[in-house]
Image 1: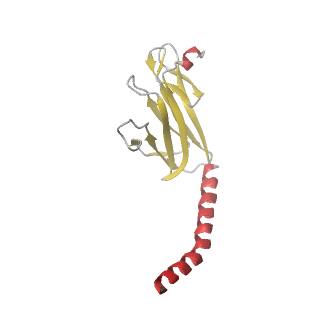
Image 2: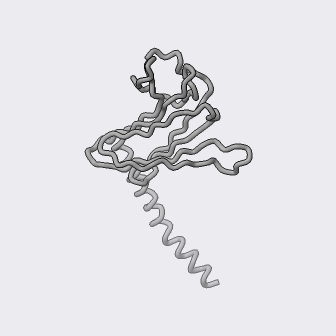
Image 3: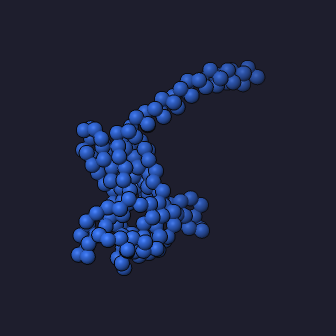
Length: 158
């Protein structure tokens, strides 16, 4: 009984310190977020296949005008400090999977602006995807997006 009492007392004494630690972490994350700009969307190409623009969207067509789509994230540092940019990609789970599959992206050392671009594949399944964005090994942002069979971007003038 004495050990249980001591554990309860220790828990009660540590709780304010734990709560302040959570608040400090939230403040640090908010401060770190202010140092970056995130733009997620679809890379637009001309008729020759050259990239000519970027459309901010969270709905990515698997194919556009019969071709696979290039999409991703541009991260801009608002200070002059270098940072490490990395990502984890969360795919929709299939019926036989218990958890969503995850694919780790390669970490990159960035000076001012970096990007994580991907290309769809004809075999990609429409559905909800996520991209977890890590800056200096800290999860700063999670982007929810849809891969869709709708060629909604096909009508955009490039």
